[in-house]
Length: 431
Image 1 (cartoon, rainbow, N blue to C red):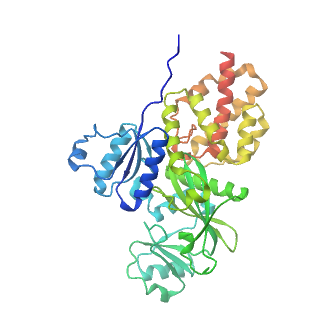
Image 2 (image 1 turned 30 degrees about the horizontal axis):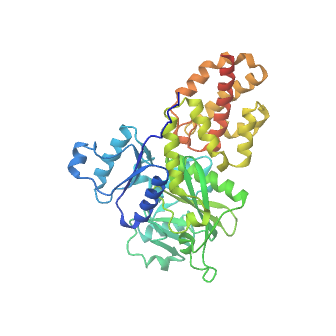
Image 3 (image 1 turned 180 degrees about the vertical axis):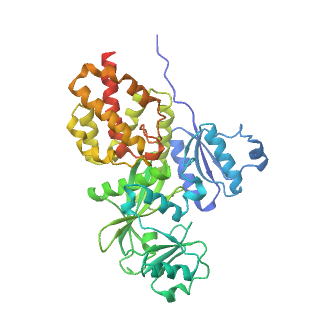
C-alpha cells in the first residue's frame, strides 16, 4: 500500500509596513515567501473600526513581521500588536524591551547597553542635549569633550547628525529638544550586523569615500561597502550585536557598530528594530535576509510541535555555522562527554550579576554539576530527572535555548543546550 506523501502546511507571511520608502523591502519579503511556498500579505492600513472591535478574522495574522502601520495612529498599532501577542502569533520584534517607542530611542538604547555586563565595555554614554547651555555643562563636567556628536534620538541613515567642534558650533543648532550628545570617535570604519533569532548572519563593513575622508556622515551612510571576512573581527562584532539584540528582545535587527581609528576599539551605536538592507547589504555579503527571516519563522513554528530536545537540537545545529569556532567545538565536545570543554565558560556564567542574566548563571551551575557527575558515573542519571523536567518546563526563548528572552544569544545558549542535551540523551538510554 502506497504511503500518502505529506505536504507542507500552507502559511501566509504578513508584513505590517505602511511607509512608501520601504516598499522595496516589502517586495523582497514577498518574493522570498513565494519561493519558500508561502502566501503573502501586506498591511499598510487597517480600518479603525476593525481595530476598535478586534475584528481580524479575515486577515492572516499567524506569522507577522511587524514594522510600522504608519497610516494608523500609534495607539491603533499598539492595540493590534497586543492582540498578536495575546494570541501567540509568531512574529518579529513584537515584544521588545521598553515597547517600540522606547526601543527606537538611541538614548534609551545606550542605557540598555550599559546595563549589560558585556556590552558596557563597548558603549559610549549618551546625554540629552536639551539646550546649548546644557551641552556646555557636560563639557565643563568633563562628561564629553569637543569634538562631539549631536544627533536625533530617532534619526536614521545618517540624517540629523551634527559634528560640533566648539561652542561656536552650537550656535548653528536651532532646536536641541530631540537631540542627544555622544562623544565623537574618529572611525576607521563602521559596520552593519544583521541578527536573526540570536545569531549574527552577516556583517557589512562601511567606510567613507577615499576622496573625501573628512565627510564624517559617510561613516553612517557607508559610501564604500564590503563584507567583513576577518575571523577575529567577525567574532567580536557577532557577540556585540547578538547581546545588543538580546537585551532589546529583538529577534530581528540591524546593529550598527563603530571601530575607532585611534584605538581599534569597537563601540555600539544603535539597534534598528525595522532594519532594512538597502541596495547593498545582500549583494555585498551574499546573505539573503528575507529568506533567512522566513526560515526562522518555519523553525519556530515547527519547534512548537516537537519535543524540547528535538526542537533545540535542530535549531542550534542549523545555526552553529554562525557561531565562533571555539563555541562550535565546545558544543560538540560537550555532547561527546568531554568535561574539560566547559572550563573556559565557568567564569562567564558564574559572574553574571543576579539582577541580570540570573537564570543563565543558575542553570549553568546546575547543568555543569550534573554533567560532570554523569560523565564520571553514568548510572546516576536518574538523580537528575527532575532537573531535566525543570529545564523543559522553561518556555523556549526565540533563540532556541532555555534561558529566555533576556539572553537571546546562542553564544551562551549553545553551551547550556549542549549540557542539557547530553543529560537528556543519557536519560533516554537508561529509560
